[in-house]
Picture 1 (cartoon, rainbow, N blue to C red):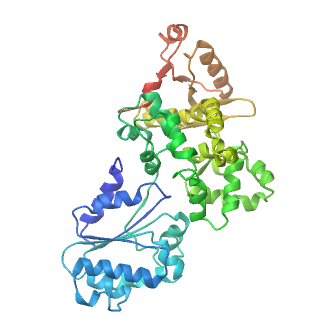
Picture 2: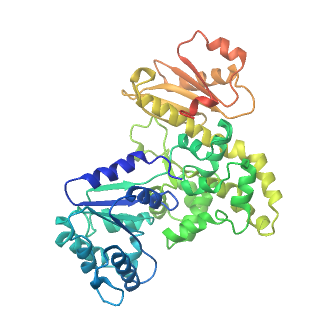
Picture 3: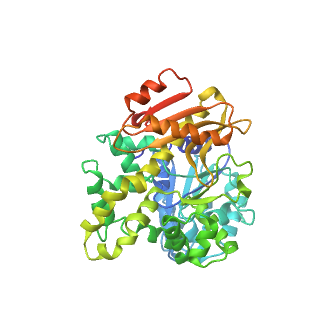
Length: 462
């Protein structure tokens, strides 16, 4: 199923319609939908799609030659003939019609031949640059794609005309995959799958959350049973170090010093690994939103950003010995008892923050909120804080994902915590899965600085 990706598709169309040669670089972690997007884009167009493999360059060249022969039927490209990469690109692009050439999993070509990007640079400069062609290089190895195509040291640096870093889909598009699910079910599904299309497609619309978890994550041999291990092994050589970092963060070690101590790694060395995981969109570094210089802040906390990776490390990896013995009922009990408080509630906070962020970008809340995030000090934490253009915290929010209405005490506690930021003006925002008590509704009814959001309010367009 092809859902969303409108802006990325439009960018590709703009490059296709450009009155010049085009060179597009697309990258992003595995399962994110890059290949699906490219195949949607080339439908009905004069295009050749080549998927590089982990075999040697000679075999990949043969595969590319066979595709080119099937496309052009030029005798020189027949399988029994020996031709070069240069010859194939030249023969494919001699016509007047716009020719799209997609090379998927491009890093595989550079693993066997370290000089392949230099070879492609010559092909682009001497042949393709003046042809009616759109070249697309795509890959899942984020670090290699960057170093081979985008970094200053790459032979291809400066050649691209556009680039796309494909990320997870927004929560609001989940409904297209699960048309029969309730609002609550959508949030809980998203807490597991995140916005990764491949994970979403594995979950069955006719099954409940726990059935889907049992069938698609806990069952030995199923697609997601060892997914984090596969992801890391495909991206990194030092898989164990990255795995240990993610495991440590999932256990509650969020400070740089705590992670380094837990793994017995120097902080200076650890910073490199953390940056790589951030670049892969697997983790994020958060600081209190009020920090004036976030890059230099010593209050930074490292959090797992990917919903599925976080779920797996919390509820699958610690109980692998039980799963290997097919004792899924024990693990399902752990999930049932801890999923809301230890996982879904945190994802819900992210969704609420995103809604406030979007509304702020649309000019709501007086049109004066420049950034939205979390805030904490040594003893207090506020789920949502909006900072105005003068650097003052003016919006404060609390998120409650619980099976009872949120009461007045939550609002009063929020108001008390917000006073620590010495703000002149104050907008208080509450989100609640099960609505609000009559007392809170009555208390806030005549107060313009209090906004109450129900569960459904965070799902725009659903």
